[in-house]
Amino acid sequence: MSSEFDIIIYGATGYTGRLVAEHFLREYAGGGGPKCAMAGRSLTKLEQVRDEVGAPADTPLIVANSDDPASLEAMCERTKVVLTTVGPYQLYGDALVEACVNTGTDYADLCGEPGWMREKIDAHHEAAKSSGARICFSSGFDSIPFDLGVFMLQKEAKAKFGAPAPRVKGRVRAMQGTFSGGTAASLTATMKSIAKNPKLIPILQSSFGLTPGFEGPTQPSGLVPEYDESLGKWAAPFIMAAINTKNVHRTNFLLGHPYGEDFKYDEMMLTSAGELGEKAAKAATEMLKNPFGSKPPKPGEGPSKEERENGFYDVLFVGEMPDGETLHYGVKGKYDPGYGSTSRMIGETGMALLESDAPGGVGTPGSFLGEDLVKRLEEHAELSFAVEDQ
Image: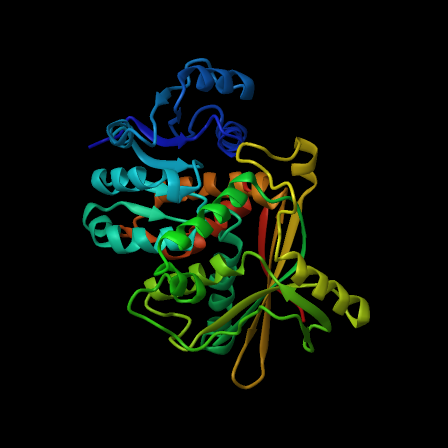
C-alpha cells in the first residue's frame, strides 16, 4: 500500500525539529524531493514554524501528541518514515515506537538513553522484524559519526589486512559546539529512571548493554586520563562514550559480528602532549562530574545560527591489528555537533531509510544503513569519511 508521505518530521515546532525541517527545504526543495509533512502538538505553532522557515504554504501539517496513542498511530499510517526529535524519549517516546512497530513504519530518533533503548529492544525487536519497521535509534551526533566511523574503518581493515581490527580506539581530536537542552534533560531523566528501576544499572554500566544474550570481552574503560604513546597526546574521558560504545557493539552484534566476537572499543578526547596536556585531561575529567554547570540548557533552547555554523568536530579512529599494524580513519563534520550537524544527520537517515531494503527490527544507523548512509552524509550533510596517512 502506498503512503501519503515519505517522511513526517515529528516535533517540528521544537528547536531541533525546526532545523530538520530547514534541512529538507535546503537540500530537497523543488521537484523530485521526498513528500514531507510536519507534525506536532499544536496546529497554530506548526503554522507559525512553517511560515518562519519558509516552507510552502501548502506544506501538510499534522497534529499528534505523545499522550494520544491513537493520534500517533494515525500519523504513522500516513507515512513511510517518522523522524522524531521529541525527547527525552523515555518520557515521550513509548507510544510512537509502538505505533511505528504496529504499522510497519520506519522510525529514526536522536536518542542517547541506553536504559530506555534496551527496554524497547526487549519489547519490540521481534515484532518490528515481523512488521518490517526499522526502529533506528541514535541517528544524530550520538552515535552516527562513531558508529559509521568504526564501520568504515573495519571495511578498510579487511581490504588492507584481510581481517577486521580486533581493537579500535575512537579519539575526538577537536570539537566546538554546545550540549543541547534535550541532552541535559535526557541525562536527568535517566538518573531518575535508575532510582526507580535499579535493574537498569548493569545495562548502563556495560558496553554490551544493548546486545541481549551476548557479552564480549572486558572493554577498556576510558574513564581515567591516560597518555597515548602512539598519538603523542594525553586523552581524557569523553562524555558520549557511554552511549556510543553501546551502539557500536550493537551494530557489530546485529550484523553477525563482522568486527569479531573479541572486538574491543573505547572512546576518549585528546588534549595535547606534556604537562599542559596532562592538566587539561585531568581538568576535563573533573568537568564530567557536572558537565552542564549550574545552569543546564533547557529543551527547546539552542545556539544562534552563527554559533551553529561555526561549530565542528573531528574524530580519529585507530584500528590496531594483532601484528602491530595500525590503520587511521577520520570522520569530520561541519556545524555545531548537537544541533547543526545532528539535524542534517537525522534528515539523511530518513532519506536512507526510504531507499533501504534492510529487514525490520530495533537497530542502529550502522546495522540498517551502513555505507549507503555514509554516501548521503558526504553528499548532503557535509561530513567526510576517509583513511588518513599515519
